[in-house]
Image 1: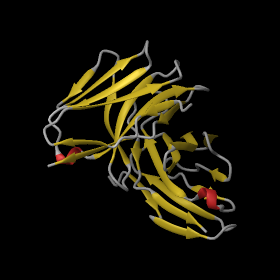
Image 2: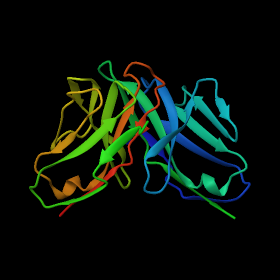
Image 3: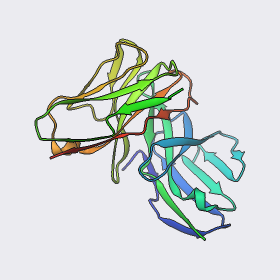
Image 4: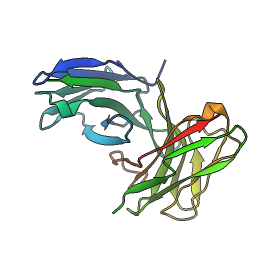
Length: 112
Length: 115
C-alpha cells in the first residue's frame, strides 16, 4: 500500500464546475500537508498548504482530517487553466529531518 | 533570481556510462533534494542535503551519489547507468530543513533515457 494514495483520474469537468479531489495517507506521524500542481512535462509547484482548520485561497479550498488521515481539495468555478495534475504531499520526519512523500497525482481536465 | 536550475534538460546514455546531473539554486536555501518521477510512482526521494557538507539517503539511493560542497550546488552522479534509471529527475530546494511548512522550489527537470 502506498503511503499517500490518490485517485489518478482523469476527472473530466466542464468550465464552471466544482470538483473535489481526495487523498489518504497512512503514516500517522505525518506533520504537514500540501497540494502541488504539475502541468504536463513541467515541474511541480506549490498550490497551497493544508492546515488543520481548513483553508481557502480564492477558488481553492483544502481540508484536513487527521483522525481519518484524509486530505481534500475543492476547486470551484473551474477554469480551462486549472487543467493539470494535482499532487497530494505529506511531510514527515524519520530521523529529525523533514521528508516529503508525494502521491501519484490526480489529473484534471477542464473542457469548454 | 533564476531559482532552481538544472542541466541538461535531456540526456541519452548507454548502459554502463556515468554522468552528472547539475543542480544549482540562487536563493541561499539550506535544504536541497533530488527526486525521480516515474509513471504511476509519484516523485521519489533519491538523496537530500540539509547544508553544505551534509547529505543523506532518501527512498531510492542505489546507483546514485551526491555531494554538497557549496550552498548553491547539489550535483547528482549516476555511477553506471542502467535502463531502470530512465526517468525524469527533479532537483528541489527550500529555505531550511526544520520548518514544517517550507515551500519546495523545483527545477525544470532532466529527462534521462538509458538504452
